[in-house]
Image 1 (cartoon, rainbow, N blue to C red):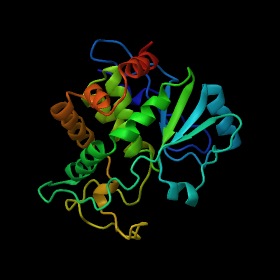
Image 2: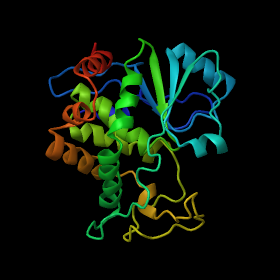
Image 3: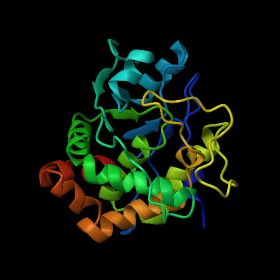
Amino acid sequence: MTDETLDPKRHLAFDGASNLRDLGGYTTKDGRQTQWRRFVRSAIPNGITAKGKRDLLDYGVSSIIDLRAPSDLEAAPNIFTNSGDFVFHHHDFWSDRLKGFKSSPTSPGQAEKLADLYRRGLEKCGGVIKEIMTTMTQGDHATVFHCSAGKDRTGIIAAMLLGVAGVPHDTVAADFALTDRYLEDPKRDHAQSDPLTIPEGTLPNENGDMLPVYMHSCLPRTMLLALEFLDENYGGVEGYLLESGLSTQHIARLRSKMLD
């Protein structure tokens, strides 16, 4: 069976781009396929060159959604904020909604501890996820959405889109794990048995926290656990989005963009 995550069209090696990946080409549960050039996930695109920008335009991208915090935008302003070629949107995904988060002491490994963060985020961030998905219904162009590494916040939104389309959980989880292939992180160490280990060279973040090794991980089991949480508590991705306030019309529009 062909590994759809490794379709040569998936990774977009545009000049200066990082972890830039199209969500097209995934087979759904009913045998359809997600469309190319609709939604593209990415790390922060600030390294992209003028040629890379032209490649984005040629690819059909005309909107950028930044999921980072205002402090991130202040420290590293988005190069597309005032672009005349792209419509720029900002949605602060985490904000202070996860302030004081601690993973469960009973979560044994890196995948489980990061899944704790995702489950808490899904509980707390329904309103902003609704706003992000509403923005994504606009227009017929391709949209790039990103956070910093293109892993956590970006990964949750990618899971929403793929879930609406009906892509199986295993495929969604495999897409999430592609960050390990396309984005180097010296602090990532999936072989580390203690998920609370502080990687060498770690500095305190804006809250004074030292992020443990599990926060850098991108194991497929993390996303599987997050999707199982949605199944058990909301009846799946669509049920979660409906409870978060997204309309059935917006869900239908997203599905149409993903599949038609």
